[in-house]
Image (tube, rainbow, N blue to C red):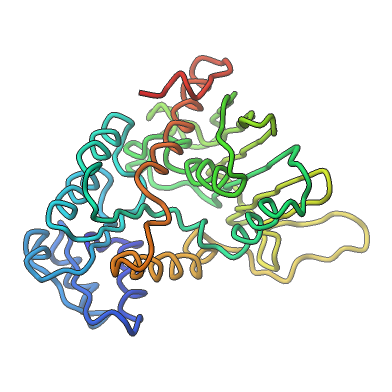
Length: 329
């Protein structure tokens, strides 16, 4: 485990609970943090990344800072160690392409962390689309609405709302529909903290998209959804629809007469909403590391989602529709 922050510690705890995992070794740029996490979970702590690789790894899980992702992926592949890496592969498109080019001829599997692909609701929506149960799709709607903004220091290095947050919606839109995004028109605004504008970012955005079969899609994003963490997906077809995220903990309130509130409580954040999906994702990585299945989400998938995010950022800045082909390298 490379990285012992919030998501890294959660992944280490999940992995330690799998019967198939004999041992978990945690490393971090802050050795004290790695020792703290290891002590709490009853696992090992390595003296650093190099020591981690000397520990006889069967697989590497990367949850370190984004700028460390490229080097760790390449180091793992060079050492013939299967690697799971939280998104993104790199901080930008050139960096992502460099990693893809570097590992292109290796048979070592690389899995990128798009946990929504392992959520039961999104999986059911994909089956409904693939089976033809919904007829032909006319509209797709996706939302990621965070209850509160991240710290200013995080925002300054996040890559922006589309690359940091919306990229999950862009990936899952491709995965559920089986289609590619051709064109986007993105709007972004700031009504919250000044540090978003200072970083050249926005705290709220709306994106209209056209898919390659003519289906229309919309993506809504915000850092200020006081009702709770609201992540939903709607596939609307000529014969029916499939809605993901409409459960007892959805932070929604009907004001129609006779309708009471949902049982709740609302999801406070992404860890709670996707706890089961994160576990399923890591269990899949065990199969990837054991060469039982191919990677279910590779670096090329991360690149495609990043292209969409980049097109959205160009569209927002220039206030015009942007074809994804414009940002391809």
